[in-house]
Image (tube, rainbow, N blue to C red; front, side):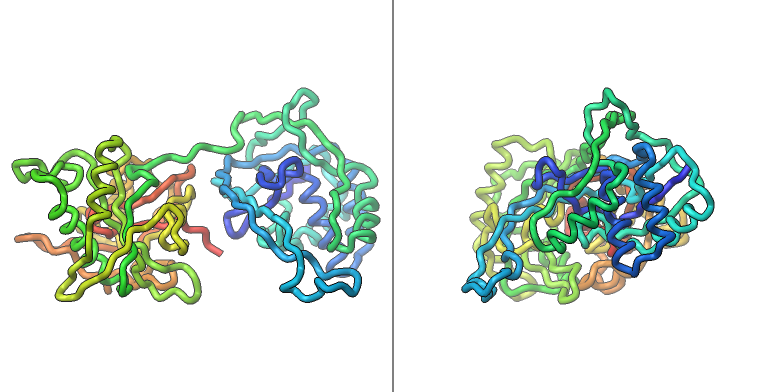
Length: 457
């Protein structure tokens, strides 16, 4: 048996389905993997032993595949300049070139490792050459799909099985494909339009699941937001969210409904889901400064049309926000904001990994702030908002997001007559995709515990 393990280092795969360029191909077809091996073979200097190994591989029967479920990212149509012209024409100037529509669909698997399992064990020299070649492969599919490829001794149970009665057509290597790829490259040189020389094999999905539906948390992915000016540092989260909530309560109907106030008519905390205010901060890229560009009111998923309409009217009527003697001008966010930071999709995922932008407030003080008790507090915080327990929890003082201050720089939430609670940044990994927005912890209604889909690079 030969097992090749393909790990997507960024947690995401980019590659178009050959039948629909706007859709992602998942799992990556065996021919795509074979093409990556061929490209690596020619890119690093032709080694005769590697060629023999590729010729052996193309003659094998189609491999079984073990691949987890994946969520598909919706991809918009984008337009890019065409390649350099082959003749001296006016469109040699980039600004004058025509533009073609392109799609960049992607899949985010629950498990970033995909295993390809061939039934026949190769001879030691073939196996050694394949192992050497695999170590040099850097991407599969689009060049942004960075990978680690290696030979393994075993694999998970395969869930994609070659079957003449299968309903899925996968591109698979056939005898002569290596030469066909070389001849095709001599024609297109990586520039002209081309089709991948390949064979096809019918597969069946033994798990009957290729793309999973994400688990939805407590908050709806439709929100009502405000752009604020001037921008404020993330450390001002509490002051700004309290000002936003105060404006909602002042302008809302009296007496206030529980889903706005968070309290019953007698003053006790409500047991019903209620709105949460979050900061929309610019974090996550190398120029990030951690500035709050806007605020959003998250809605519980059980709100009806009348409640949504009421909240929309209240948010639209807010003239400005007053914070500690300073005034912030506000502007209602439309459906298509001009910045990703202000777009609900930036904060919604779905994703299997999430990292905190503002620290999570613990509902009790753990003896060891980074130990098992602290991790259990975080798991309970997830259950409190209707999520499953994460399979991995990292509790740390510093957020992984560039621009987000460390947890100790955020003011503690004050509680009348009670000590302040511990708060910390966290990174979560679930065993299934989670759809946000995602806010957890005891400060979730005031903007603390705000998570963002995390895909480490």
